[in-house]
Every structure is written in structure tokens, then in C-alpha cells.
Length: 430
Image 1 (cartoon, rainbow, N blue to C red):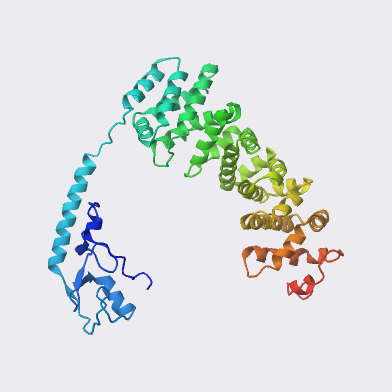
Image 2: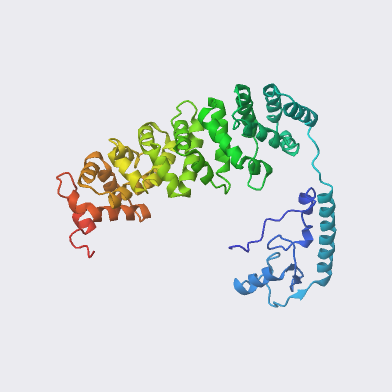
């Protein structure tokens, strides 16, 4: 049965621990949800009206869902007594929730006094680094202390430290305090409706973090890119950061992508790049200007599956611009690197690889490029994709590629002769 299968029944005792769960006899035996319009049928069992009507008249059933007795009389009698009991129970539960909501002020954590003391020291003392380090060790304990830290206006204090590196008078101690502040901030949840996001998404804060991404220690850069990755899960508009920092911002991201020691930083940087490049063409042009295509092509051969898929996605986004396609075909390893990842890494990598080849074939089909595709492997991979069972958008793109350039490729002796008839090059009505 589709969505009207009778739910697995549990006894009232099974739900005794769930205070907000409706009593068993208030729930419809079909959906196990609280009844709004209870009706009783000839077998004496009460159901939610919509559910039992669907059972009888949509699914043409002639049995009682709960007892499986045959039913000949399909009359439904409203159960007013049960409905009054349900309404009374709901009213009581709503009153309980209202009382709980007005008196549910979160209790401070066991470390509240320590948190508050360290925050006061950070605000009043010029020697902030040690206090931030001690605060960091407390925050790492559990989510309760993190939430207590946020409620204690800890984020505001740390963001003020971040903003200080924008001042001309900032020194090494200020810079170190900023690095330590990032050690705490990257551990906090960053939700769009939350206080942490609102403070970190301010222009001064994002500018400070962009500077740390370029000049900070390896650990500070990891923490910064982790924060940026969390911000990609929100609706944050990256246009200010890109406009404010220019290609230097993309160069710092590409440096992290190239980091062979910290794979987490590299992966986060790729995710941030994907989000930023997806947002606008201007961002893609800035990334191309920063040398993104060349960097990614050279990293692609040694990348693992996860990083490979992300790199290919970035390259695909860049190849949606003429400048990106030009950079790829002019790179000696551009086409061959894409080809080697097709049918070798994953279905996702193959799909993205075909999209890249299709963009090149569609918008940059010079004689040299088409010859390189035949010699360096892409055409061979595309032929293999044609022989796979079933139809897909990827296979459709492959067919279009051959229809566009099959006549050029078939002049070479290494091109499979049987593809001419398979694809209908000669008799193609177009």
C-alpha cells in the first residue's frame, strides 16, 4: 500500500517517555497522527475522516484497516466525544509549551564564570593572546560551552580583535591575537539567522579574514578558510570580498588549493571557489586572471577522487568563459589532463569532464584543438561512452560532439570507421 499503510503500532507504554506525543487512542490507526475529525465506522473503530475515506473510496478497500473485518456498511459517524477530549488535551499541551517557552532561559555552563573572566581580561588588557588561548581550551570542551560563549557576547569581543588588524597602528601582537581569535571562531556554528554569521559577514570582518588568508600562519589560514566554507552554506554575497581584494583573494585561495600538506584546507578552498565562481561571471574572470586554470590543470593528475571532482567542477565553471577555454587549450596538459580523468575516477568526474570537452568543442573548435583531442585521448574516451547502455545527458552531449566534429575526425586513420554509420554523419538532416 502506498501512503496509507497502517503504521507499525506501539503500545502507550512505548510512548510514555514522550510527553509531547499524542495518546494512543487520540491517533488515527492508519496514519498514527493526532485526529482532527474522528469518525467511527461500523466495526466500532475510529479513524481520521480523510484517511478512512481514502481507504474506502480511493483504494476501493472493503475491510476495516485495524481489524481487517469485512465492511459492508460504509457509513461514518462523527465521534464528538473523542473530538472534545482531543481538543482538551491539545489545549493543555499548548499551555504547557507556553509556560516552558517563557521560562526556558538557557542555564549557564559549568565554565561560565571562567568564560566571563577571560572575556573581561581580553577587553581590558593589552596582553590578549594568553587569555584567548585559555578561552580556546574551554570552548573546545563541548557545544554547551560554545553556546554559553556566544550568549556571553564572546563573538563580539573576538570580532573586535579581528577588526584591529585593519588599523595602521596594528602590530605583531595584534596579529597574533587575531590568529588566536580565529582558532575559536572557526569552531562555532555559523547559521544564517545566528549572531555569529551576522558579525562575521560584516565588511570589516570579511576584509580582516581575507587579509589573514593571505598573510596568516598555516593554522590561521586553515581556520579562516573553514569559516569561509561555513559561510558558503548561507546566502552570503561574496561580491564585496572579491571587489575589495581583487585577484589577490583568488591567489590566496589557489595557494591553499595547492597545499599538499593540509588536505582539509585544500578541500575547503575548492568548495569556496565553487561557490564564488557559481555566483557570477566577473568572479570567474578574476580567478582566470589569477591563473586558476593553469594551477588546477597542474594539480589535477595527482588529485584524489574528492579533490579531482571539485577541481573539474571549478575548471568547468572557468571554461564557461572564453578566457577560461583559451587558457585550457593553450596549456600543454589541458586537454590530456581532462581526458585522463574521464572513465577513470568516478561517474561524476566523467560527467564533468564531458561537459568541459563539450564546451571546448562547441566554442573553441580550432583545427589544432580537434587534432589534439583525437591524438591525446578524449575522442577515444567519448567513443567508449557511446557504447554504454542507456541514455543520459552525458551521452547526448557525446553524440552532439561527434555530430559537430565527426567529419573532421573521420579523416584520420585512427578514427573508428563504424562510427560514421552509427552517428549518421552523412544523412544527418541538420
